[in-house]
Image 1 (cartoon, rainbow, N blue to C red):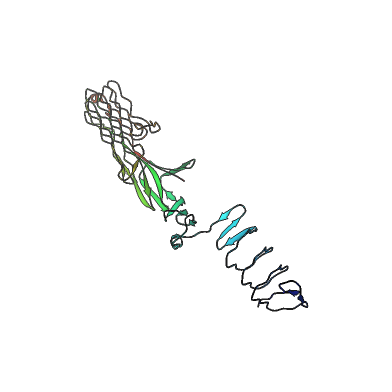
Image 2: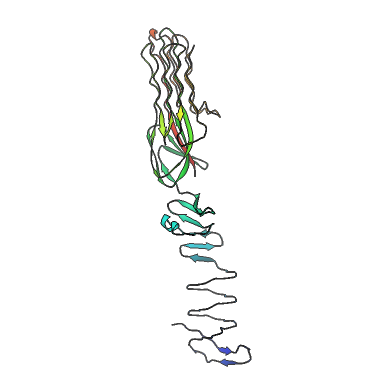
Length: 343
């Protein structure tokens, strides 16, 4: 039951009034409305328009438009709130977000699955800040960049969100040849695929190509490195060096179907002599030059076995005169895959 407590009724011209005894309780109704100030507590429902200032607390529902200034410590609407230092817009999901057919441009929602979204002038939701959860490889951070490094086969797993990621895929380097009475060719460097791609939740296999094994058979060509693959991109393996001077290991190539090229490069071919040095990996061969993954194995002098490659994707050195008892051409180094994205 609602009640409206007053002391006096005054006519519209303000010239006469009726004093009411204290304790009168009832319903006050007027066809033309009421004009004047109400001081005190009002308990019950008010139906109609309120013109003027309201000072105090309002507990209950307000239906209609409020025009003017609202002074309050905080305003709570459902799961959202606004105060002097922050705005909490609450949460929704894909179904709740998509239910807003005809949503006004500028509407901002927080989707628990896809992050902070803005409804733009194009009539579509646009990602402001995505929720993105991934795992796989060795994970590090540098500033605002997340880095997944794979030096052995595995999976890159996305459990939530969509993201544009940058992908580097380097193939294994080839081994040097084993020269019989001469220098052999060095192994080729692995190809370097570097491109970006949009991905969604799922499991993405990562394959790391090993380098070509050391060639211990006297007078034989080196072994080719193996390609590395990730997200459909390929960094090809470098070729094995020839057993004679003038036949270097071929350069590894790359492939980035469906990706946006960010600086891919073939590896370097191995040296054809006279020292049989191994070829550099494709990233070292790219612009700008990157040296952290090493370089092709250095060449050798007479009657010396080829050097093994170090780092990633580099060609092994060719050996000289295996008939003197050494074990031939040096091994190539394995490939690597690196995935990066901005938080």
